Image 1 (cartoon, rainbow, N blue to C red):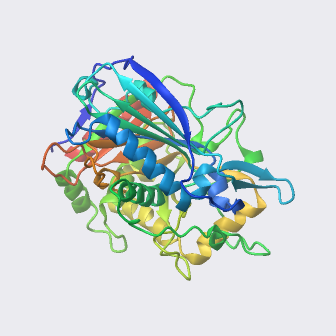
Image 2: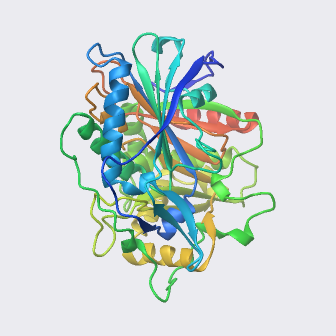
Length: 447
């Protein structure tokens, strides 16, 4: 079938990274001091996202030249994205989280590794040591200062380098972060902005008064969280976890679509069939109870679903979690096409009125997405297609954390001009559950 499940390769634990310079980057022009409204979607995502972008050596752009061009581009881009140079604050009058656009700056770190790029191992495997390529924002230059954006450029002995970017998720979703990278790359090439960002976040404000018109089982109130859990599916697990990469080729995905073709209602897309397969494997790898219910969560972009629609260039978080719920017995014995239908129905449910109801729910309650598994897709965000002056990234990935309830989808790693519209799937589970998951995954594909 062409599938592989990658076992843990030999991993370097120390990438021998040396920090050479830590500084702040400020907007190249004066920006207006203001408070930026954050939507109820933004405020739920108040945690950092760390992404790593790997680049091969380019003789015309050695790392020291890239450092200069990247710093200049950052100074210019912070004029347009002025909130990235600001700081999160709580408005004492409204009791809402906001961004104080105070031009305090973004962080910039220059570092080097004693290795060559081709010596650090398989870039697709989530090596915990890759965290040495991103800079933690805590107490960056002065005690208590927490920049919303930090860049770290780490050069290798071969002339290749990584750009590790830490941003608060309250600032961007995946789509708007991709637009930000396109704009950064354009400015680094001395070009105009690729896209004019639309940053009017009041368009996703709750209605007054809030009108929650639907039950929202995909959300859980903060005071209803089980003991010891702080943030639902976003909570870091304290258990020992195995990490594995499952790979599906375009042929594998085509075969999954064939299994689902007797569905009369579902849009049999690549994402829907992959999500249905992962939901089944995750649910059945847990406790053996056919009456237990399992809920899958997955992000849906609401820009085009609202009335009127948001511009594609909307900055901020314009994604909500769709869901599907089923008993484990149905997940095990039911038709695969029905599982795909349920995933599809969760996406269809996300129309303007439903999305507004979730946003209004967030106005009334403090809470988080609630489910057994969250499928987070980086599959087609296109970070690896951003054209910088020094070339496109060789590979892009986020830092992977100890979260057993989040499954990540990535584009496959491409060597040269070879292209396969398959997907890499990163799963983290306790060892016994991982063994079950792997068996279920493999057996379903060959059945």
